[in-house]
Amino acid sequence: MSTWFQADSDGFLACHRLALASLPPHRLRGLLTLAQGDPIVALSLTQEPQLGLTVKQKERLTEAARTPLPAKLRLEAERLGIYALLSTDPAYPSLLAPLEDAPPLVFLRGAMPEHTGVAIVGSRRATAYGKTQSERFAKALAEAGLCLVSGGAAGIDTAVHKSALAAGGTSVAVVACGLDISYPAENRKLFDSLAELGAVVSEYALGTTPEPWRFPARNRIIAGMCPLTLVIEAPEASGALITARNAAEYGREVYVVPGPVDTGRSRGGHLLIQDGAGLADSPEDILTALNAVPQTVPMSNKSAEPVVAVKAAPPPELPPDEAALYARLGSAPVSLDDATESAGLSAPQAAVAVTLLEMKGLIRREPGGLLIR
Image (cartoon, rainbow, N blue to C red; front, side):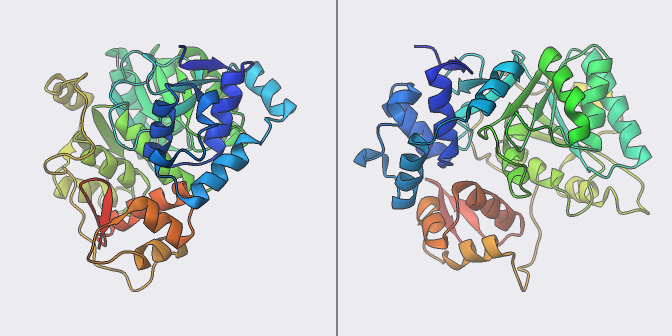
């Protein structure tokens, strides 16, 4: 059967409801597999025991199955040409599909390029230097025929997307909200252009607002789509470092464009270089690196040795979500589902908390998706 669904179809409505349930990727994948790729059937399997859904996950799925798609949102989805795509579809990014935490379901505007080349990420508060380097690298790589993937945000992301399109290339934006929302608002025309010449992608249902915790979660998609991630101008606390960490965990290459040492605006990238990331001072460095990287070989979620090491001492205090999850972990491995439920978090909130705790060196993942301090 078809594994992509136009906005005016019952399949799209079912996909939208599945997305509203906010299930962990492996749970949603299991649900869709059991339903043989039919999202309508998947919604009826709430009580299927072999799925191992928690009580809260069953409640969210049951509630989502009853939630209508408002006529306004459906009309907007049709107007924008939004459609739903399952990870089993040939159009789904080939490097992303095999990953354990890849979203089994995404929403798209435009057409996904057959091959993606380089993810480029960096600060939203880009300096003139950062924008210049982004434009320089994006132009050269796009002219070389590479599709560039970024996050559609202000600063480095915007410079990358615009430069790729201006060079006659293609680009994909992975956003942290529903595709009916333009965030930032000033990039509305840019997203329209990307939909014509590339794609805009989201794992979130229509109407989903760009809450801060959604951005770290979407970064895994950016990293997972490409064999190489390039960091341009990232401060020490930049979200771009999460993307780099994701890329390293997937066994992908990580490169950094160095910046001035007296501003702190590139400090995070410089730390990545110290921890093993490649240094790129010209687009040719990236093209050379890509020639040595297999472009179509699926990568596992864990490489033998991550490129980027994490060197962080336990902080005295943690943000609420991280503290709640950390309190449920100990010296014995605990499943992410159990920790998420006992911490009272949603699946996306837990995914972000796990990533941030890993970056701080406070927890680690064990085989089978188990967590341990």
